[in-house]
Length: 238
Length: 238
Image 1: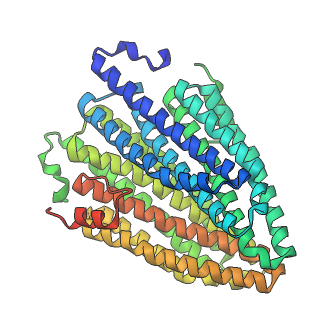
Image 2: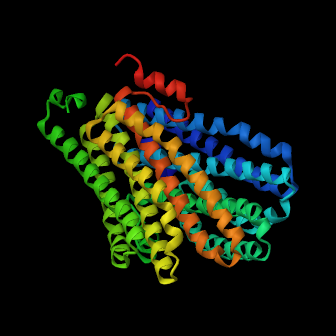
């Protein structure tokens, strides 16, 4: 926590508020991670009930997004944060937006899984396993990096996305082959393709969150920069 | 402009800064709209050169996003905005993030179009026409609503998304039928499906921007609320 320099705030109340909002983000992140983990688990075990639970839980994530957003606005209005406090608030604003959408993607995957169970299609769903585990590891890693505002961990997650992209490409090719071999199975395979796309998008969003962490720690916007330039920012003088 | 209540700022400089950042957002919106319009045009006319130009222009949108983000952080740090000024800044933060991603989707469509021209596949691309025009109308409408911070116009765009979703569903079914009829054509049709998905996502993002406008004008967060509750917020006492 010393990186957040909280001790220098004169107002103990301000500290408490920042800490509370940070905890809410971690709480939200935990819920989102659970949703993704459960959606992969539901696929693996063909667990109908678990998939239903995922659909019923999504509203909690949405509610947390709105609450945290509101808390951030209050802090800006009341505390007029500057420098790294302000960057933290901005990073939180952006992070929760990506977290909420990761939650939506997990919900989409659960919905597809439910449809697939009903139609006896789970044999295709298992091909999502590798990509799913890679993306889950990215989400876990980036939430951990956020909790500690750890630059190196954030950079590591950012680099993991290349592997997720490769897995996604390979999976897409494989699923297209299935479709060509058995055209009657196209609607089933399409469902799996949409889920693969959802997973790929979750990887992109983890990458976004990694960029917000780097922005917070280094004060430098690393979106849309070259990989070399990002590495320089991360590894440069601290 | 009177809705923005700018006249009440004691600092003329603050007015200028807010106005400048608002103009940058409109500028960015104009670029993004052009990218989407051009990508649809490139498909319709099989215009290779136009599609290439779209790919080359995307960096401008990214650069504007970073600039505007930075300008907003500066304004918060220097001017400590409250109430509706702060809501405007927050709405801008969120809007430009969605605009940037709409730009990315337009770029994706142009990329698919280029591939399709090279492989003589444009016959499928024309099926995107209806959905493309609907989504372009949504983007145009929401940028117009943003320029005037017009609550009713924002609400109208929000409601247009249901039609875009129906068009997307119909198109997906049609494309799946093509695939089943001619399995060798699956990779071509898949490309068109990805573009359809991009368009559908652009519609969702226009809906997001409409929600930020409502948040700015009414001070109420209308994400994740029921359609009835949103209508009440929009049509309620002003």
